[in-house]
Image 1 (cartoon, rainbow, N blue to C red):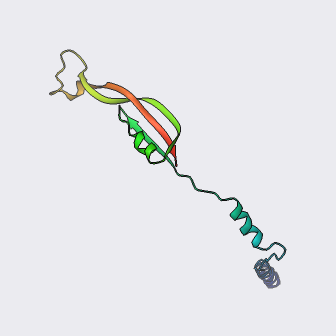
Image 2: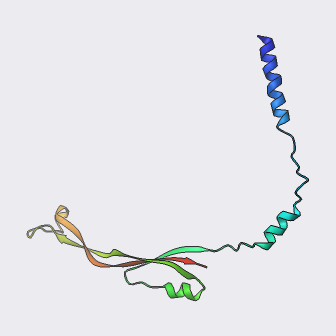
Image 3: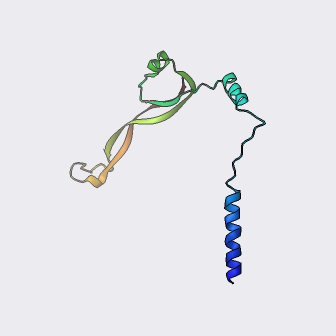
Length: 116
């Protein structure tokens, strides 16, 4: 039993030692890699998503700053809410359970995807 344990430890150590070999490839020098990097520059582009709701519009500030609109999406959005009584004889100040909240004004939400 000790022989099997000793033999398995030797195999395990041999595997660890053989995996620590350095791999230097002398056929392909690093100069070729540097040349490819210089030939194809990859400028990083910044992207941003902004939202304007219920009549607000500040997109001109971003366009003047050099941003370009990639995508524009318009969605319906509730701008304000109002409370109304659920029944005719409901007193909303005394009985909070009879108060219903409804949309008051409905507007648009503009979502812009910008890139610089």
